[in-house]
Image (tube, rainbow over all chains, first blue to last red; front, side, top):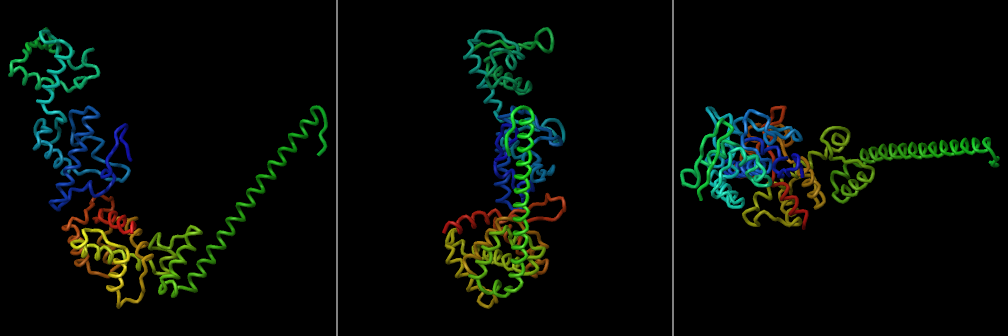
Length: 179
Length: 213
């Protein structure tokens, strides 16, 4: 089985026709399905949060079989993820996207569990500490994309679980939990 | 060689070892050269044999099967490519290709009845019926070879189909697009030569289920 670093690639990745958008509907559906799964799996294990469609994202081409996904194909697969709520287009034009291998709601749940596990129910912590501090090491929050973290926090703020406040500088945004 | 004591004796021993080593290397080289020569002789005799018995190879399945075995022993695969000596001499590359296409055809036609699994014997019978008017007889061995050749390549281009089966472009495209619509083929437009390829993922499952009988 071919690998990309530590990641085991599925068999279809070595089969040239999968790099061409299939015209027959049933075949296309199967194709889109396996590509969606691959993209999510890969991003989750590699902790990738943003994909640039015009950049060298390793899944978009396979040099071993000398095939690359056309821009149209890339767009088709990402759009399918967007429809499922597993991705969001960033900015105008379908060039960059956010990958939600956890949905925002899932991230919110992870934050709540993190708070409970660390006894932070009545504490204050900076946003930066949540994603790079000592407590988050070994948890899924470690290295999370800042924008995604903020969205999950705002979701929890709306539910009254916490309050976000600004610190002395942009880096000092903090969170006070009231759970 | 009598051993002498002291440094002189040591130097002699070292020189003797060197000479034995060189001798050993030469012997190995001679053996390899002889083997290469024998192999080359065998191959040219095999080609001579093939020339002489061309008709038997074409017409007689049992003879053909033994011929393949003989070739395999010297590392010759007459079906490896459709170009070159073997293909031109025997013209059997096309035979197996055509067989491969007919086999896929039969498997397609019987799929509604057997769900995609067909017994090798039955396949051969259907094949013989279909080829009743054809000049060359077909054996189960032939079927297996044709299938393994199809599997090896896995895809065709429109040109190839036209050329090998003497079909018009329209007919070739129609046939391939039908297989595409049936979900039995997938297109591949990514090759740098710009030519569309039709891949047959079903062939792997056909060859596995047939081979298991």
